[in-house]
Image 1 (spheres, rainbow, N blue to C red):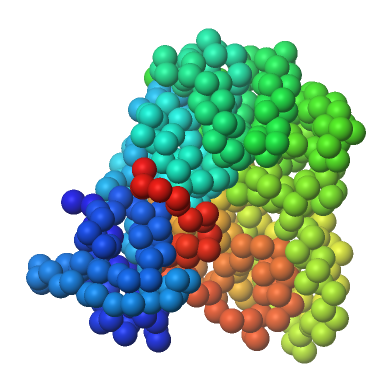
Image 2: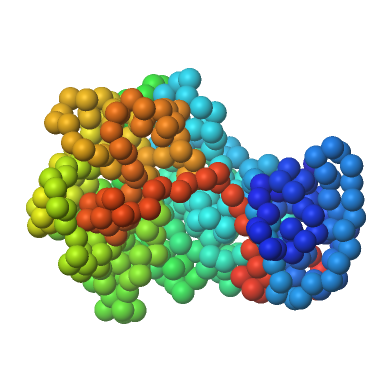
Length: 462
């Protein structure tokens, strides 16, 4: 049953006025069934509404009311899709989910490949599970931009990489998006010996040719864990290999910038950190179009830190020490920032943590487990406080990848612990620990989008 379950109702909202409560289920709007918050958004754009609600006791109630065209209901849902997340049916040679340790929480094994989550939250999709109705809906609802996992424009190779014949339909699918005016960001998960070298050159050239509908192309290195049992043999990039990729992509960036004023193709931070090459300057990221894909996170972090560091009122009257926990790859950046920090009575220790859970080849902060961070803290110097990377927590929840809760971490650590996500947050915690607000992280919620976020549908619904 495609019902949207209410998680929260905003105080003073129309939803509160109507008596909606957490746990209520939205069954339909004006008699139309709902597949997701996209349907809900379009349906709620009307001014006369019949809202069918199923209460927590199973009783149904029809709420009829008038509203302003742009008036929001003020409801948050427990899930963005009401009829189940569409899962991935591919067998990718580099799939990270296939490399997750056994006996972890169920959500870590979910392979989503849902174009709705691509539009709403920037999740990358392969489009191998999409059909005619999906493309019609994308066109009719003007769902743009999407985020597409291209990996290569060599269709025979793409079939091999994704493990399905449908992978060869990519170029025709992109043609359909282009014809519909749908914009998209693309990514390549780069695997040494498979889709690099001349194949990567072809992919970049083909995607550049799809501008302006193609907005950007990110190149990210394949992620490998120690749990690659019965998987296709792959190797990570070493320092020399990462440097070669940087040199190769820079040539394309120069061509693109000369023609359009933007780089179009961007490398994930890991390439620069692995190669020991300075990060590009902020302007070279052209507004950070793929920040959530790990492209420019380090540079963005530095710029936010520098902005916050303009504050000259920081410092402590008494000695105060803090340990900042991070992944191995970003540690040099943190050291450089902290070494230039001169705040009275403040001592900062940067603690890069080796990822024992997934393996030492996984070096990013967001894949650290609570157990690994606790073990590293117990082996080093004791400080007054600890700052953890918030990216290591599951989105919207106070739980690490190994199911350790933040509360349990606090108790075992024995020191005051806070989390930071951005460079600005980290600087403010270091500079004003006693005045900084405590972390406020609640459940993951999905707001229905205002009709202002979309182009109003003309004619019948898809």
